[in-house]
Length: 176
Image 1 (tube, one colour):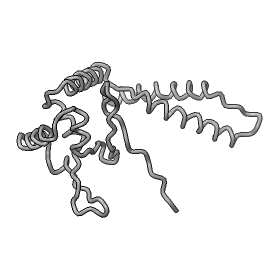
Image 2 (cartoon, rainbow, N blue to C red):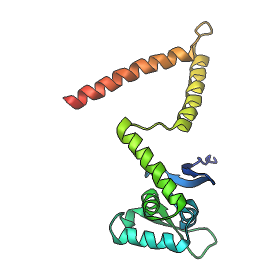
Image 3 (tube, rainbow, N blue to C red):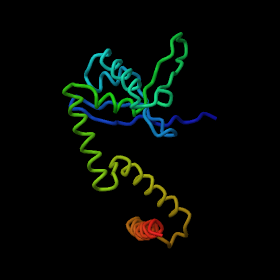
Image 4 (cartoon, rainbow, N blue to C red):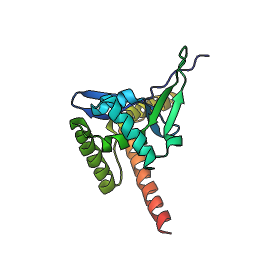
């Protein structure tokens, strides 16, 4: 049985020149990239990225052991080194280029919004989940007798009602 490969690419930042996609490792809740996409992301020379990465580890800003990964490529005698999201972000905050400045503005705005609002919204993931939700409603509908019709809006309203209860439960539990 052939296993279907999951799309593990996400966009962490979209510069005016286009999106940079990096491989996600969602089991470890990070993103991995070689130096080449980091160089492209911040529009700097390879030596600049190498120097920043070396200093990030030397300064203890990021733990090297858990944020660097060597991967062996088939038919290659040399492994490639991958950097985690923590390293990528640290390089972005150290790099001095027009793109890195725009990245820092975006990252700071995103972090500020998260801190003030207390949450973040990933609109593309919501859209994907909505499609999956609608498919689930259709699957449930297929299991029900013909005379019972599910209205997706009513199902969403019901979920919203329960979600409000969950939020109240979480808040009261934290207060106790």
